[in-house]
Image (cartoon, rainbow, N blue to C red; front, top):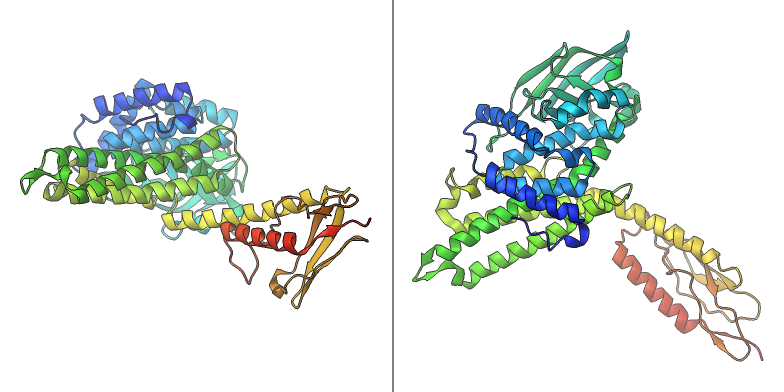
Length: 492
């Protein structure tokens, strides 16, 4: 059972209770179900699991937009059964666009049956030539009469062939690129929608292709307005990405538990494996990485639940770290368990086959790292501007204008104060920054009072690709240089 003590800072009492109930349900009921032997069995089992969710009200965190609740559910379910976790996750993916952008009529029609486990959803975004590059979607939706006609294909769609409702992303205006992508709710029985075949994974999971061949849907199938689909899709992924990290934590926790159980009873060279230092080192690293991943995961979920508009950076950190961690943990578990760990019937082997997909779907690790970098750049630019503006508020102080050019840099001062030349600076970093000095008093030495941190390095400079820590260090050095070299002595 997942320990909520570690993450209690991010949880409310109701979350602690949900975590306990979810763990009891997962280990007491789900873990006892036999694993499906093949793709056909996995499809049948997925429908049965959805029925259990509906009967027990386990999907409620999705409808409450309770991200911490969804994370707790996925962590518990993934520890017991990766397939069960996937069924829960896909209901969230297919439903969240309706929750975020659906009309009252669309919500009335679909949300009740989805919550009851009577309608299975699917999130149909990926195409043969549009994976990480979502803007490359080629499926089209043209207006015709009182509705739309969809043409194109989708691939690697979970629940393809067994879903009752597909949340489909298609372009209503190719010329507008991503701003021309719209989102549609397409029932499985819509004329022109065809299940094009299963795509079989090494870990049983209902995956496949669907095709739209003059697929006709009414106008009220459109979610929101035309052109809103791209933003709606990314908002859904952004919101639910921490739950992928939570599932990774659940799988890593199971791998750690299986490893601990094995090394405590397995003997080699006259002693149990748990006594060997290299074994202890692996276990310690697994436990430490798991704790760090859980903290990142629930930090991101907490921020969203507290009303933060976007958690792009927090979610990217959580997903990239947690999924890579889980891959290492499961691999270490196989290594510790040895030959038994690669038997198809062993839980760790099933984890090994299931965990790999987490590093790909809903944004690869590489895309998460790029996203994180771009978010950091944007935040740096905003921080710089805010600090410049803060400096300008000190109007009662003596103001100095520091200018940097390609050949030299100098300080121009208010009358009666001394100045000191600063070193030359590259042309690419030309900037004008206002810096306030504290008001002078008779017979005193006045230190330069910087309004905000002297933080002028803009992330988009062509000559410098600086990280935030480096920029902060640089600004600290410049501050010290100014403090040492510029003294304002009032006249007697």
